[in-house]
Length: 419
Image 1 (tube, one colour):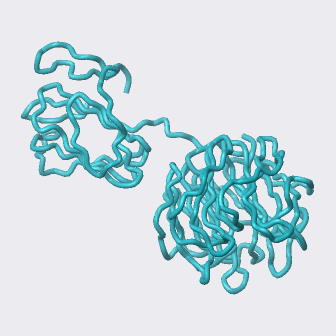
Image 2 (cartoon, rainbow, N blue to C red):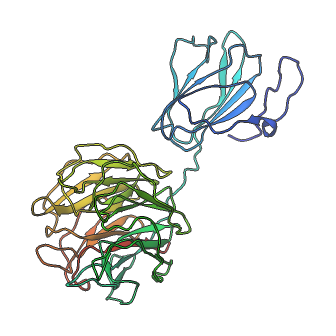
């Protein structure tokens, strides 16, 4: 839509009212119901719940209300408009009026008793944020026959480079994630003394990993990780000193790890996470005393949802990669033995049924995206540590094994870098 949006251009007084810049904008609405007033604008945040919007009961001709999808979540949790006794586009108040499009904005004006409220505009914002596409990846840390601190860079064609040593404290059970669009972070793990740590290491957009940074949340190993919200990351769950954890730590777009937040689903370890749908994430599978097949969706603001059950064969130590810009795949892992099953994830976060036979069965794999829309998984343990890799194309097909990709190891981390 172009041009200025007017507020009550011809109100009951017959005078020309202020332009949209003078509209009275209200605080963000997060409740499940709200009664709005004429000539005001409302940001409706439906991240956690749907919202019913009740319009004014006695509006004047020319009165205006603007509603905006604050968090781009109306496609998940829609708004319903209650026209409060008046018609809506010449339809009686008994009709249900829903708006359920991501990024939508609604500008409605009261036309009088005959046709009631009429949308002046009700279009979605076409400028949907685009996920920065990382061209390169890095695989770091892990366990060969002992904890290592080496890394292997992955170029935009999926070629894994030779080992580079000396990238922080040697450890396994570490996870990596991309943040800021073009940088990475590696965090947590078990050091050479088998002591759990809470340290992290930032990686710049040239693939250089920095020194240890301590004090980034509860000490643990084997957490899940994922990118969310275009340029941020999250670490969630993991094995703590005495038990599995359900804490999460958000990572800002400048690589700052936030304090623990609790209560985010079933506590477990060895549950992979991955981005989907452009700006959201999903964590699935894992183990506590038993293996799990559940998953948890993560919103584009880092909110972890309740458990969803029945998402493929229960297993631990699987891996995950994004592919095809907005989709994802869970790969391999261990049931009672190593498996090579995969599960595709749609751009709506729906996990598909198992597909088998896509390379050497193994767990403890490191997976990373590369080349804007593809992924790879590398290393792992198939009974012994291996140095092979498998490429994932932009439709989620996993290729045959390729051997000779650096020091054989398992349980390291991986993150994308470089635009």
